[in-house]
Image (cartoon, rainbow, N blue to C red; front, top):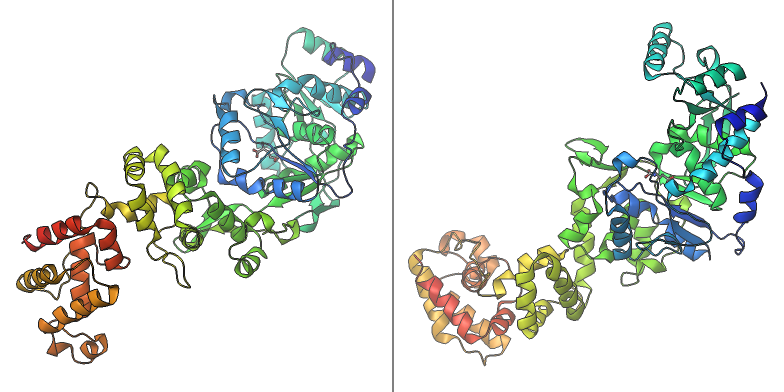
Length: 547
Ligand code: GLU
């Protein structure tokens, strides 16, 4: 076969060579050990948690004086959604992930572009042509039907599945045959001519998993599809070579096709990047673990965390805790430090089944928010509310001091309150402060009869004095408790519950329900002062008259 003629037949318009591109995209001039990495999402409109997970590469790049870029893998036009690139950029920006190069909303920046794959067709075709010239690629005219029939036969024969060896019927087409088929207008794909042997195991150094042994690829996989657009396998090899990527951080589902990728790098004589396969995100479903699914699990979408209002740093703390074995220890030792100060290393990343658990996120987020100032919480909640709860935003602006004071209750000190982990939870938690959103969620404590309820609340109203100190106020609650025959000491009540209708806990909870609508709340006296005397009295009176 005359490869030169074949190459010209297949790619008549391609005049560039690999050398031209090597000159156009020279090795980057970076310090020793600098990491060049990227995220390479497909613009499907769905930005998932995995995109943020892999954006961990940004930290690695910036910790080492390297480069982090955004490449858009838009070879599958059918799956493309309008505004998807903007959505990825916006989501990453929201989490503080910044790109040095790559696709931007306006266009793109950087000397190693274009950063959208569809704009790189000539480059892929040049490399494909070079492979044809080396006898390493050939056109295949097999139809879907003939490929299905081949697979069925292979299954019947219990042979390895795939396009290889005697099954690869287009491998040995003559130039005349190719020419004839091209003239007849038959569609073709370009296949790699593999000389791999399935008996060979190839060592690969994975940045997260250490040394792996993968089976050598023996199939003639597709490089270019019938529209001349490359497959992911080919495109990312070309891109990561010419973009001078040092680390490819991607999901472990790509491990299965890793043999194809290293074979392509090796065939082209290019240095392989360090592949880093991250653990697939899993969750518990009953007793068993399963992959997070786009259909079943809203928490797989990155937008979920924004809509729910988890602070960005809390999401990072959570992600790093789940994904990095040494992060939790570091965070415990540095509870108020920003997660960006943590020195991130790939070797400490989980290599299997990273377990996602929203209850854990809640805990981490509650801890995190409990350590922030009232101003921080006010501003965070207001920013969220401006987008997701505009009524709340308006009320917050109108009554800024009241909200700040409410947020400040139980803040600071050794044991700050941990009432909410997200802005949505904060909105629900703080809702009782505003007369418009106040609702009695909890019932009167079960031990208290209607008659007692009325008597206790009446006495409370009669003795209520907003000038009291917290101690004086509490002494009055004790006095009412005693006067009503309830136990002032919970211990005593627990010992002989039959002697009392209830304890001070019931009495306080009754007052809590009257004022906050809930049996559980921060300090009542502090809350009353945020509400003001008129509103506090109004609520108690209203509850007193409620049958
Ligand atoms: N487009 C691929 C994906 O979204 C990128 C994988 C990679 O990072 O190489 O899974």
